[in-house]
Length: 279
Image 1 (cartoon, helix red, strand yellow):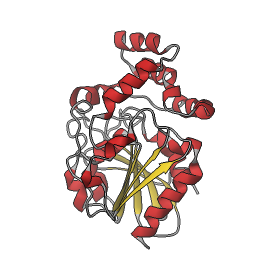
Image 2 (cartoon, one colour):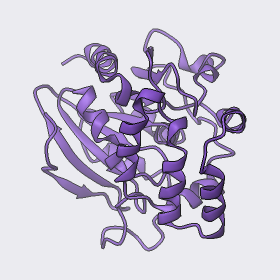
Image 3 (cartoon, one colour):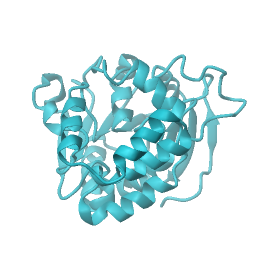
Image 4 (cartoon, one colour):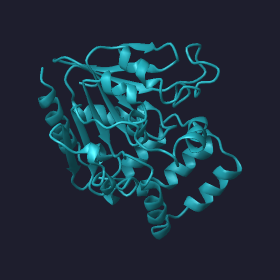
């Protein structure tokens, strides 16, 4: 079961790995958060829902979330983003990487991982940046009270505080109506990091396209069937993400953080992947 972190370690470039579960079975499951800027604390509920065999670790790139102002983190923490994920994969044996949203996109931007992983899971993620115009249109068609004001404040003074306020104002776009309160509770306590958001905005988001496809790697692609943030239909026209070793699972009545609304279905999806990976 999920408990307090029992191990905490850093790679040479400052990637932090924190052990959160250790159960029966083999393998190390590395959970990479979305955002960026939210921190791996956003994935505690996912780890609890997934109940993966072996050991689960939360991963923070250098300079993301609460992985800042540490002697292990370099002065320019973003210099090797997202390629430093290879160091996390090399730090442990039998690694399965799990990326939520932008975290999954980071995984698909590091082709060296193809030869380093035992398996992979992509949650509410995408193969390219084509989801961004669709979400912008959705947000325009479904305005939320307070978002424009929060966005203006963030534009005038981009920092961790205004980023948190903007994210909380936009929370209903990420969750189904019945789960908004739980979603806000999740988002309220995260260690927001504006610098990570600024790096992604300048160097990653608009030009993102997957640099490799998991043709021979056991992979789970899972999302909520009501994800309004990252349009999951864009996987359909990507041939490298279909085949006998690629599992596609849609979580009913769930949004961008599907473990909030339907943890049982998320657990079943991970059980399918773990079953194919074997002992």
